[in-house]
Length: 360
Figure 1 (tube, rainbow, N blue to C red):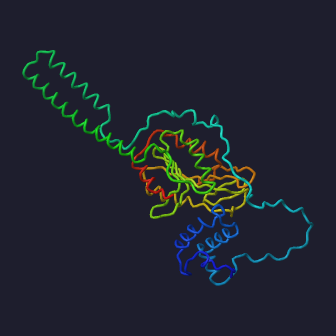
Figure 2: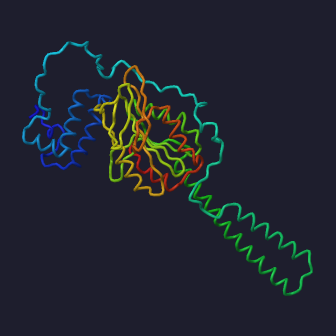
């Protein structure tokens, strides 16, 4: 058995369920991650403990005292020596990642957005101005007829009934307009002039917060959130979210080694054609949870990757992955295009539901 007891490391009993192990891992990961002051070695041990105790087969082997490492391969026949491959020694502690410069002229949706468009708040409260204008014009026409033409008693009675009905309708519409105005004032007082809510955490999250504020706020209806918990959770399970109209993007921010990243149909991450073991992604569960919470909203996910040392991050086609890896430029171009389908709508009910999940 490994020298470190995985149960003691995670602080759970030996009969703990997978959900309890997951909850303990999330809590410890926030303080043991290298970005939070922990060491890379300790965090890798925490990940290994989590992966072992949440996999029934590996956990059974671990409980029996079997080593978690595969058995050594039989000795091979001697062969000619080859030059040692260039090894990647991990993150560079002296490297400070920066947000890449993105030329908005190369983004298809950028020029098509009316940044000064008036925001449309839904669901609509009250009748709106058009019915009031029509009713008022009808009243003026009826009064003109009443004053300008000598009507017979029967026609006069009909006109007076129409006038009375129009006046009643105008009064009801006026009350509706006042109610709509009060609702709008209450909503704007509640959120102020802010378009961003919550606080980003580590360096990668701060980079994404800068990216969203710099580019996605071009959409008048876009609202940005940092540090969201899933329903019934008090932890920041989702790093960021962008809501625009009835479309919601959930985002995780990662500082990973340079390379080419892809996600397969199961959501597993690959780097340079090999399974990636350098970090976990939790967005699939989050997407399902928010889709259930907001059934009228389309929900997508994205893993935003920044290099943890000098080099370039590239990503493959999203394919069918719920939360594909994306470079900052690709995210702005593709997810911005998706959000720009309804750039000026703010749904008060959906906004409040998302804001209620901000825990940071």
